[in-house]
Amino acid sequence: MIYITGDTHADFSRFEENKFPIQSEMTKNDYIIICGDFGGVCNYIVESIYEKHWLDWLNNKNFTTLFVDGNHENFERLYNYPVEEWHGGKVHQIRESVIHLMRGDIFNIDNKKFFTFGGARSHDIMDGILNIDEYEKIYEYRKRGAYFRIRDYSWCDLELPTDEKMKSGIKNLEKVNYKVDYIISHCCPTSIQTLLNLFYKKDTLTDYLQKISEKCEFKEWYFGHYHDYRQVNSQFTLLYENIVPLEFNSILK
Image 1 (tube, one colour):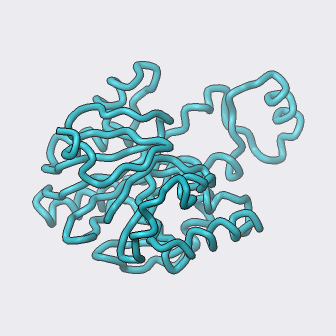
Image 2: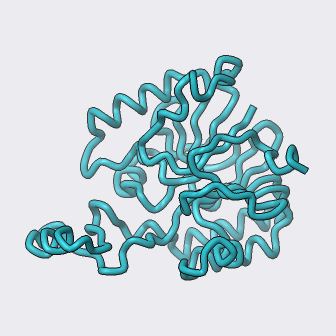
């Protein structure tokens, strides 16, 4: 069994037994895939007591938790985990059964090919990015309710991929002739984002995903980031707090 859900932001209560009862039938060979903004590796310098509790809690579940990164992760800490091979792609193993699926890789899970590409541009930075030692500005911005983030604390430029990582993703897709079963991302292609909300501006990542969507052959594409649930069309599903089975769109057809 494979289930997909949207942003968790370190709130894993949706996986409690009373809210997700099917887990009683699941094993470690069954999977939950989180579409970014996992939030379990987010504390500033080291793993917090809160993070340890919930990561251990997830690790003790019957199922295995997989996630792509979003734009609200501590990338410095996340990328400090050793890179390992798992089901054909590269991962960071946060716990034995809590696994980060890296950007631009292809994974073979239950005889299905998944292309994963996390990351997104933050939309709540209209008033700027401040350094952590700019105390007076931080106080002033918070007081007036400004939309800003703090560099290397609540924002990191690694929220968007490097050119090297995007080229790597293309090379991996070329190896399979641009044919996969499913695509998991945090944000979505530019054309889909425009359908969701004209307020969101395109960026290098949404344009990159747009090119992939036009060239790649796939069944379904699941993504998060926009804090809503919407079946955009027969292929694209935006998820937030809901948990749906893989091939959810096919079930609805």
